[in-house]
Length: 307
Image (cartoon, rainbow, N blue to C red; front, side, top):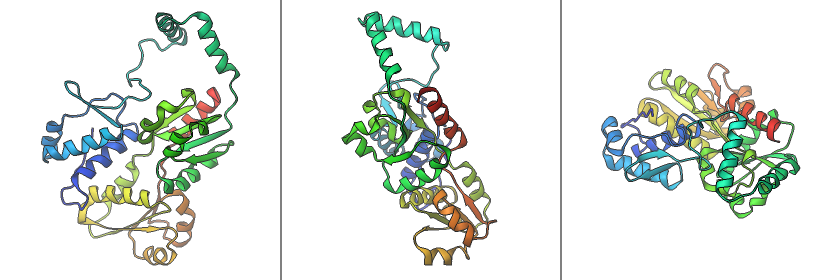
């Protein structure tokens, strides 16, 4: 686990830990059941008080991202009850034989298994992609990124809406971040139509920010206040007070037109990119994506094979 702490940053060290660990889980850099450093080991490595690491780990455990157990340490939580380690048998016949053995040991008859498989054969095709995200102001960003890649409709809802009405998931391919998955995964009836997706861990953007000279002004533009807050914390964690950061909503036209003329680097989300390309120096502009190409291909493959 790679953690970079900036003690000179205005962002509390505990929040820096939470942001970076959760981002590494959401991006797939940390996998299910992977063991993390102990509280005291991480505190010693980073040169911070162990209570700060304790607070960060406890928060991540509270939201379902980590499991903290006496004797086994701290691990990334399991997805759908499965470990990240590959099964001993990866051929289909072997997997089916293992499944049938477990089914028989649990008291099920062959007719019960055949009935379950009939349900799969007779199910209705996917009619839409349903993206689940807790932050409503994220929704326009997710839709802008995903819609151009698919012929089926793409819709978005909140985690709370899924919890209150699980039937929203009927005839849908469910797409969600690992950060949200743990909250509602037990409500998903057909997990072949659930895609826990990776998001970009902002590697490219952070590499660019690392090269900006001290005293530079970095402009963050988005339609999402939540996204701008996350980005601001990441920049502050990497550069601290070395650079100035200004976050502006796309809807604030007056401020936006003023700031683009003074910024040394401009980072924007997908919904903001078209507007920024019209008013900003393209050499200073870097548009970021939440979904990497690998995630888009994963969704297409799941639709093709199980939709």
